[in-house]
Length: 345
Image 1 (cartoon, rainbow, N blue to C red):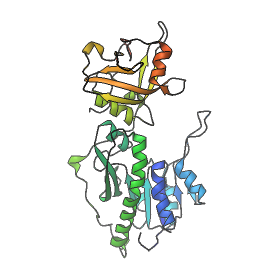
Image 2: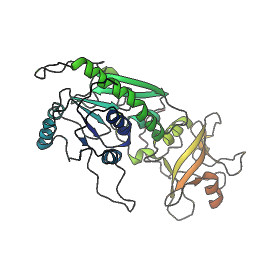
Image 3: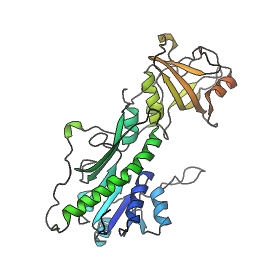
Image 4: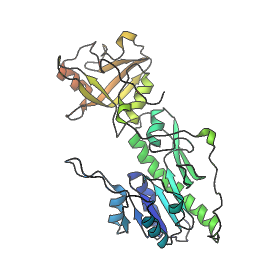
């Protein structure tokens, strides 16, 4: 990293930000303030949800604040008083307005978990997996008020593993993003030294092509319900893409007259080459392997390996079949399928 040390405000909340923030701190840059989202009220016996950036800042004794809105006048004034060179934003959760961006000499940069302009929004990693993409990466942009729309300062690319979940991919991308973040800081340092703060900042990096923009909206639980009429590849991408939250699911009416059991589907293998009859879609199929949970789908079968019944521990699918004495022909899913709005694969 460049030997010149700068004053850098860090803004982030989730785990994606921590490796890059740690690299900035370890390089000797001055961090006058770390800003995170406020912790939500505790609604579970398990305690408050994780707050990785908060915990990282506390562990290193860094100044820490959690304003309700980064764009409040008092917060903007507080940022301006710090007279920082740059703000680095990652996995924060709020959009900065022009007044907030203007509080540092060089504005802000943002590390985003996609190859922009693809997958602008809150769930870029998950949407790439759900869509069946073979490659993704990270982008660092010079921030503008438009969501994820600024010019691109640095990128890194990586293939998506054939069995990789969104959680596993996000962890890899957070590590890959470190060098991209450092590269972007060095580019600004080399390009903006001596810049007159009374003048607008020049456009650095590559301007995003509006024709290639795609959206990555936040996930919703309803999207995670499995539609067994879809292709084996689609269902495999759904199961991997919905981890660690909200987890793909289906239903099983294991006891006549009782409400169906919701089953979180944790791990599957797709078998698109084993064609299933339309009448077998969503049904337990005869299998060469004892107790194997093979379920018919639109172009073959899905082998469910791990699942978790509601209110119980995760288990092997074979254990669930034995415990409920399920036979070939047993139907999974609701009697009236719900609309599945996840991307086509």
